[in-house]
Image (cartoon, rainbow, N blue to C red; front, top):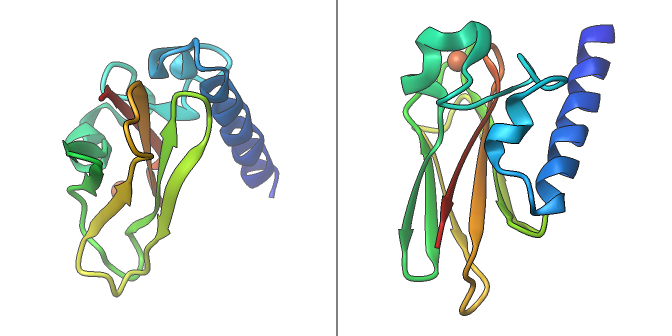
Length: 135
Ligand SMILES: [Fe+2]
């Protein structure tokens, strides 16, 4: 229970950092977030898991597709994606179940949006991953 509570505190703190808009995702992986939020540059203890856990972000017009190249099995799957704008606005979230074929979600950006976008992907065994791009 303590681990879950600590994870939730870390996730909320990471979301708060992103909401500030002046910190890149790299800032979310430095102390005290080491081994709480994982990125391509800071995979922490999951260095061998980057390819199967880092969410990819594809932008086509005002549509954003987030994809995690990860299996979807009853005991090990991607639980959730979120897409967050630079000011901390949550543009969308999708919860998955093990029955889903893949961890792919599509979100609409606000009309004319320009700025950073952050995608998160949470694996039930390998924690909370963050990627970003700009549009
Ligand atoms: Fe995993």
